[in-house]
Image 1 (cartoon, rainbow, N blue to C red):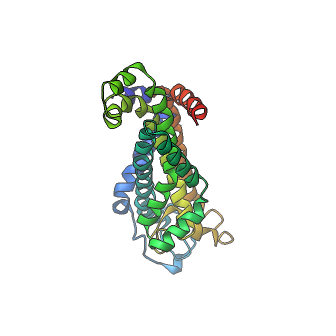
Image 2: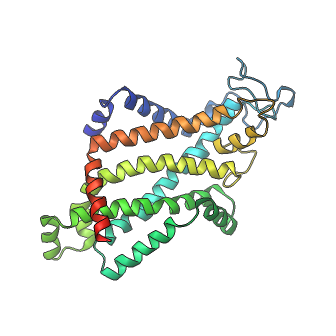
Image 3: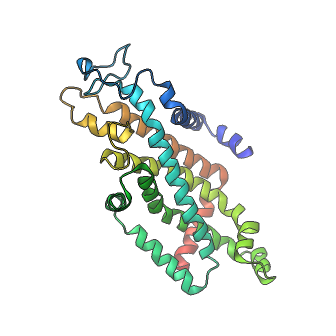
Length: 287
C-alpha cells in the first residue's frame, strides 16, 4: 500500500494514468453490459453515420454502433493482453532467475534458447502458431506470451545475478540451501520491483500485439468485435467516413500510453531503475 500511495503522489499525470487504467479494466470486465446497443446488430439504413446523440461514435459500414462495439470488444483485447503478459512472466521470469544458479552448460543452453526466441519474427510466428493449433484467441494469447517471455527472462536473470553475489545469498548457498529455497527466501523480494515494472510495460506491448493480430484477422474472427478488428474494417471506408478509425485507435493509444506512463512512474517509485541498470551491465559482462 505504501508503494501505491507513493505512485498516487507522483503527480497528476500518474494519477490520470491510474484512473484511465482502472476505467479500462472496468470496461474489460463489464463492457458488454454497458453497451447501449447490440454490438452485432446491423442497421444498414444508418450505415457510416457520423457521431450523433443516438450514436456517440457513429456507426460502421453495417450500421453497427461503434461505441457498443468498442465496449464489447474490450474484454477480448484487454484480457487477452493481460493473459499474454502473465504467460510471459511465468515462463520467462522463473527460468530466468533459476538460470543464475544453473550449471555452466544449463546456463549456456538457456541463453541460447532465449536468443532463438528473440530472433523469431513476431507476426510470422503468430500466424504459424495459429495455423498449427487453430485460429483462436487462446492460441494467439499463448503465442504472444511465448514471444514476450525472453524479456522477462533477461530482466529476472540480470537482477538475480546482482543479488546472487551478495554475502547473505552466498552464506545460504554454502549452508546447503537449494537454488529454489534461496530464490524464495532471499532473491524474489529484490527482483520483484524490476518484474513489476516489466509486467506493466509488457502489458502495453501485449495489447499492441493483440491489436496487431486481430487487425490481421488472427485470434478473433468477425463479426466478434475487437479493437484491432474494428480498426481494420474501418480503414476500408475512409472515403465515406474519414474519422472512422479514430475511436479504436484512440482506445489503443490511450490505454498503452497510460500503461507506459505508469511503468515509468513505478520504476522511479520502486527504485527499479538503478537496480536494472546495474544488473544489465553485470549480465552483459557475465555473458
